[in-house]
Image (cartoon, rainbow, N blue to C red; front, side):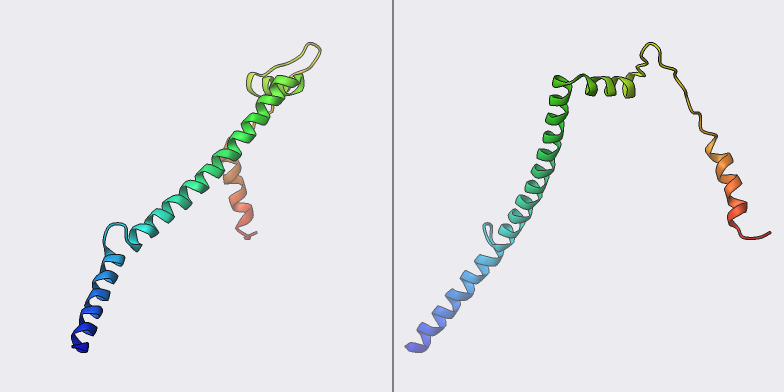
Length: 108
């Protein structure tokens, strides 16, 4: 009689363990959900940092003329009266890399 009770309890334990590890709502799904939560938390932190940077940029643009002027110079090419505009033109990339290649080869 005690042997049958032990076998039934062992079978029940095996069945519950199988259900715990394999069925929906089991440990596999919990691990998957934990990974998804971690990924979403990281994404939220990244977006919060971006939003804080944008909010600081908006505050600068609303409060001061220096930020507006700097943005106008960078994006629109603002030149004030009395200033002289200089444009630096880089040489073609292929010519500069071709000239650098023989010098770096180490042969005289």
